[in-house]
Length: 387
Ligand SMILES: [Zn+2]
Ligand SMILES: [Zn+2]
Image (cartoon, rainbow, N blue to C red):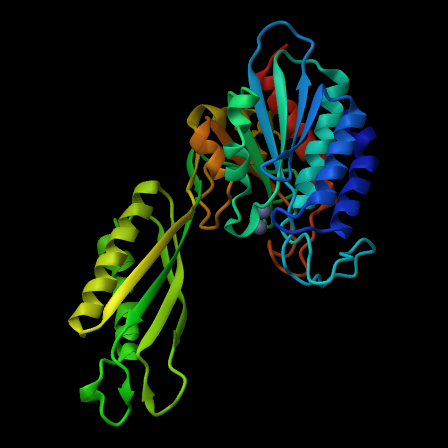
C-alpha cells in the first residue's frame, strides 16, 4: 500500500496546489466540487453524486470482497476562509481576500488520493462512501445540509470518520481521544432596552451602559461559580455596542459573544444561566433584556469503538508511540460533530508539524502530511471492511 501511495503522491500534491490557488467560501465551492467530482469519475468510482447539501460531493466505491456489506463514510471538507494570504508560495491564493488557511485543500486532496487507491485495489468487503463537504467554516452548516439531504440514509452509512491537520503535532503523528474531542460553539446576543436621557440627569434615565457592564461581569460567574470546575467551558463577551454621543444616555444597547462547551448538557446549562442572569440583572436596574442564544455547532463526541479502531489503524501505520490516544479536548469547534450525532464514528488529528496555526494568514498545509492521511484512510477501510 505505502509503495503505491508514494507513486500516487505527485498527482495528489498537484491537486492540493491547484485547490490552494483557487479557494472558495462556504457553500460557494462550485469549482472545487466540480474538480473533486471529475477526479472521482476518472478513478472509476461506482457512482459520483453532486449537489448533495447544495455543493457537497459523494463518491461510492464498492469492494471486491464478499465477507460483508457494511458501509463506511470518510469525510473531507472543501471550503476556504475570508483571509488575505500572506505567503510567497508559488501556488498562493489567486483570489483576493480568500485563502485555504485551515488546510481543507489538504483534506480534500488526501481523500481524493485515498479514493484513487481504493478504487484501484478494492481489497475490502462492503462499501466506502467518500463525503466531500462544503461550508464547514463559520458555523455555515455544510454537514447539517448534507445530512438533511439524506446522506446517512440514502447511502446506508453505518459509521463515519473525519480527519483534521493539526499544527504543533509532528508530521507522522496522530492524536485522538474517546468522548468529547472538540467543543460545541454557541453564540449569543443580549439586547438591552433602558431609558434614554440627558447624561447630566441620570436619575431620570435607566442607563443601558451600566446594565451592559453589570451583565458582562455577572456572566463571568457562570464559569467561575456555576459550572462543575472539572468541566471546560468558555464564555466570551466579544462585542458591546451602545451610545453615539458623550452627553446622551442611550436607550438601547447590545452585547454579543460565544460559548464553548464539551457536552450538549453544558451548552444547555449555559443558555439557561445566561438567560436568567441577563434578564434578572436588567430587571434589577429597571431595564429589559432580550436574549437570543444559538446552538451553532454541537460538541464533537468520538464513539469509543470507532475511536479505538481509528487509533489502531494509525498505530498500524506509524507505531503506537506516534499516536496520542488521550489528547486533551480542544476548545475549537468543527461541524463533523453533526455526523457524529447521526452515526457512530470518530475524528482524528493528523500532525501538520511546526506550521503557523490554523486560520493564520501565513498558514500552509504541509504536503509531507499527504501520504500519512491517504494511508490512514486506506488503513481504516482495511480495518473496518476486511475483505
Ligand atoms: Zn477552520
Ligand atoms: Zn478546518
